[in-house]
Length: 165
Length: 340
Image 1 (cartoon, each protein chain N blue to C red):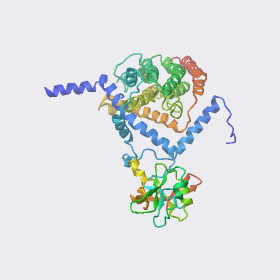
Image 2 (image 1 turned 90 degrees about the horizontal axis):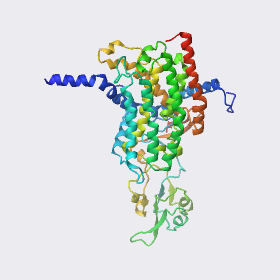
Image 3 (image 1 turned 180 degrees about the vertical axis):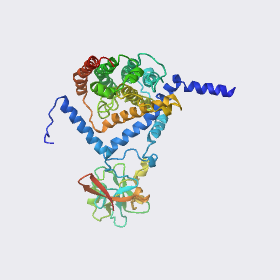
Image 4 (image 1 turned 60 degrees about the vertical axis):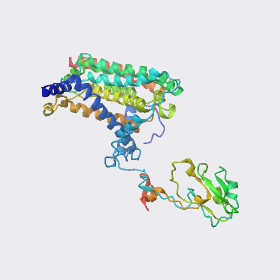
């Protein structure tokens, strides 16, 4: 329509506008387009570079403590392990804001982001990872239970479309 | 002897005095409407917004029993009583609200000659029973002793005076054309649906019906994004279920009245169904009312909420003159047609 600017009309024009709005709604009601990702069955593949759960590799760590120093949320802390002279980092996901400073600052590439972001915890204490637990591979629980990864594609008609990867 | 007793009990239950308020169009049918309508509302809104809506509770039917799951959840939720609330009013007002939405079912004729209590003035009786709910909403908002409930209550007070007048005048415009205030006589007299005879009254009645049940675009009283849940902010558990159910029940009552006034009520009657039970003749009334309900809740996905002042302006400056015009229209029709 040419009239982009709203002008209040009389009773008949406003009736026509209401009818047009309801017709638009009905058109959407009858179409079969959907944009939702049905999450536990499908999982958006976020690819490399997504700032999800942080992976720590013990064999690369030089115990410099830079990650604990730079952490703006005080989520990263250095822990003393029994029988070790050096200290190693542990992370508290109650505090972590996933800013990625620790990953950027690490001189030995011992920390890296993974695309895993859909974990949940039953107890708050489970969210604190001391160095023994920190050195693990992150797996998305949805993927573990057989979710199919999908990739997001921009679509002229629907907006977003999800194609199997 | 036992068969006699059982037969008497069955006859008692199947008699209109019990069947109409309890089974159809009353409590049982209303519960069914409540459970399916809210699900349908959520599904339709989701469809328009390119979503799925409730899906995982009974997946083959698209989450059809989601509302049963919700109801069970509300049942077992802890009902919290605010410390500073007026406890008796807080607890009893939702119950009274539900009661005032159920009592009209005794007076709404459900099928030809099938009504719980046959009164000559069923139309004003049903409308005035549903008009008793806004004062109860005010009572809950005052009793909960919370700023959000009070704001919601003040909004309800403003809205109430804006819509009730137009609702009653639009209904009486139809009644004045047929010369009777009895719903069953209005339906019997309707050879042409009332919506064709008096479209202005139908439009006014439909819009004020949405306002009465505070459905979008007129859910100003509850205004979820603005004042939490309006007068119902402090409610939880089974009391919350009652106050939410009451607004849908009110919509159901008013849509039954709408169908009887404007869409020909239980016509066309299917005589084959009468042999099962006389109430089954009202099946087309139920289907029409359900379609009206579906349309009313579908509007949620089309419109955004009006502001309070806009709604008041619509109520007083648009709907009220239109309602008066519909009375004049009815009287003019009477003059032209020389009586129904």
